[in-house]
Length: 101
Image (cartoon, rainbow, N blue to C red; front, side, top):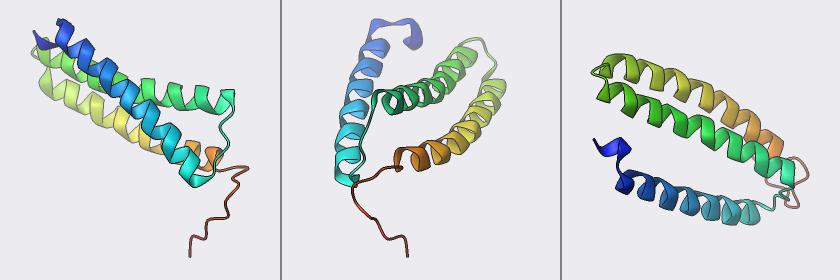
């Protein structure tokens, strides 16, 4: 199966490094100052979001694809709510004044 193969975990590791680097550059362009606890919250959010994919793939392998998809939708909804809160928290103390009008 694909999810217990080494290629899958290689791709997930590469994706994690690319996402981390992209997040760092994005935060710099927005003028956010990222402290250790902001990084920790971003990593926790990323882990929660990615666990939805992992669980979905596992449930597909167990012939429970519809349950896996429902579980992924629930995790995606929770992740979206947490992402909005995290976005607002990360923007606190921004060096740039971004106008939202």
